[in-house]
Image (cartoon, rainbow, N blue to C red; front, side, top):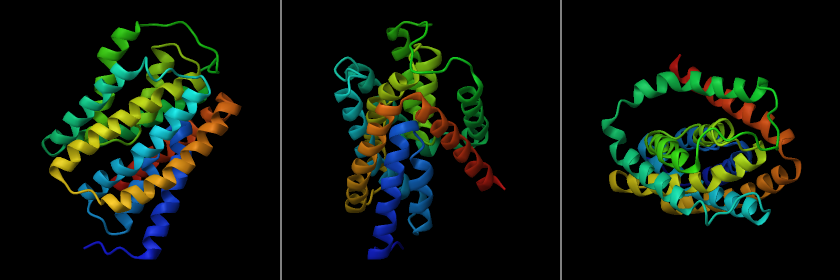
Amino acid sequence: MFEVTLDLVMILIAAAFVAGFVDSIAGGGGLITIPVLLLCGISPITALATNKVQGLFGAGMAALTYARAGHVDLRKQFRTALLSGASALVGAVLASRMPTDVIRLGLPFLLIAVALFFAFKPGLDDVDKKQRISPVVFAAAFVPFIGFYDGILGPGTGAFFMIGFVSLAGYGILRATAHTKLLNFASNVGGLIGFAIVAKPLWMLGLAMGAAQIVGAYLGSTLATRIGARLIKPVLVLASTALALRLLWDWF
């Protein structure tokens, strides 16, 4: 049984701040918060649900910060965000019935592939490249898949959205990062609604962590806006690699 103490709350708030900072730049905030929630004695399903509570605040703040800097038009993303949220809701509701162990087996290798892509592919900078598919096809075919995954598991969602925006939509690194945040916010909201149906998030703890997420996300997204790909690429590579290693460690 999880017992709330001041020490544990302070640890979780600190973890949420760091997670908000990292997630606003490259995704992967769950790499930090979920293990800490579990180490504090919270059950896995409650930890996932509580993580959605606090995570949506960081993603929302990052989305607003990038929008204010002119890197994304949130109004134009509204319908795509609804699609991401609805897909995450379905994924969260079905999480207990899906073969999540099979997904976990392949996830570390996908994350390593993402890290290698951003580390070694030439020409990845803040300049937009050739668009490979139309925005409608991207929204209809790619976004629901990643949103659904975020509802089921979640780790690496930001990185997977990023690689889609870069490789398919042709966005530069900074613009791609900016466009992932509203979709990630929506998938967090959808996932939270789904988990709230089958679990009980720790609402007060999640809100306290959410406040720290807001501060961390604001600082991270502001820094990323100023520095761009020179900051985002290495953080993305490190976050994806660290998450892959963490998942492999859990295996063995």
